Image 1 (cartoon, rainbow, N blue to C red):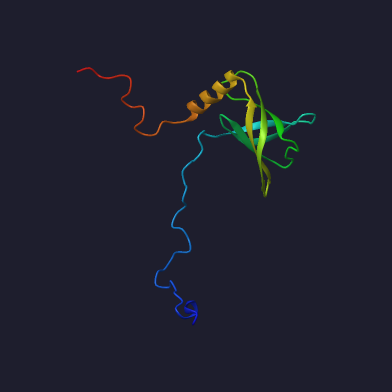
Image 2: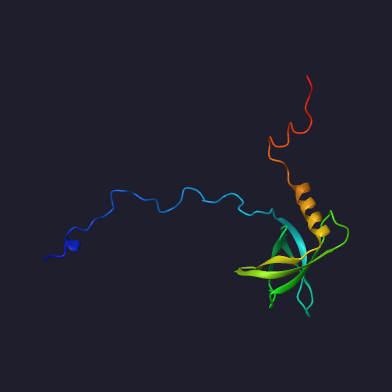
Length: 144
């Protein structure tokens, strides 16, 4: 008996398959919560705080630092224009990613005052413009 796999080998040279994509698959924002750039003071228990720029969301933050936290718990200190005084939030580290300029650290808030959370949400709403067409014609109607 002969091995038919060696004799009748199919090739797919008839169909040209592109090696690169025509466009990026996911160009839109996939996160549930919007992000805003903000200055953060990051503290670890028993260590000095360090300042770095980061992205703030309703549930957490991410920041890039050259000295990443050694433990999993941190405390963030930041200010938003809709809240009087600094906001202090306890957080837990959920991810670390090495970058050419340092380490990106992602954290989730574990303890955040409700007034502070509402102030963050209000700040996001104040800075988010409505997409064209939304919000028009709602609420007030002209009477005929």
